[in-house]
Length: 90
Image (tube, rainbow, N blue to C red; front, side):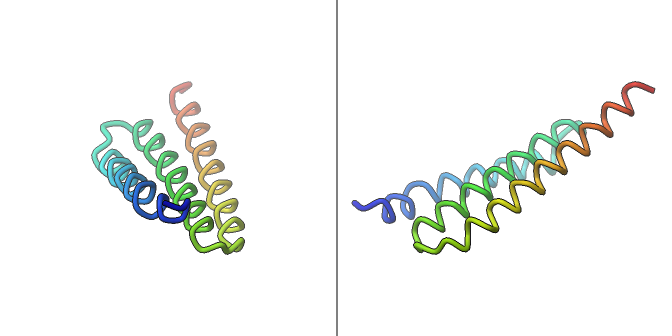
C-alpha cells in the first residue's frame, strides 16, 4: 500500500469524521467558547484534508490554500477570544 492509497483509504475518512463531529459541536455548542473551539478544529481539519489532498495529487498549489485557511482560522479565533475577554471583563 502506497502513501497515496493509505491517505485515500484511511486518513481522508477519519478527517471527514472529525469534520462531522466538529460541525455538530459548532451547531449544538452550548456556549460561545465551545463554538470557537469547534471552529478552530474545523480549520485544522480542513488544513489537514488539503495537506492530504496535496500529497495524493502531487500538486503544490494546495499548500498555498492550506496556509491561507490556517491563518484566517487562527486570526478569527484570536478575534473572538478578544471579544469574549472584553465581554467577561465588563
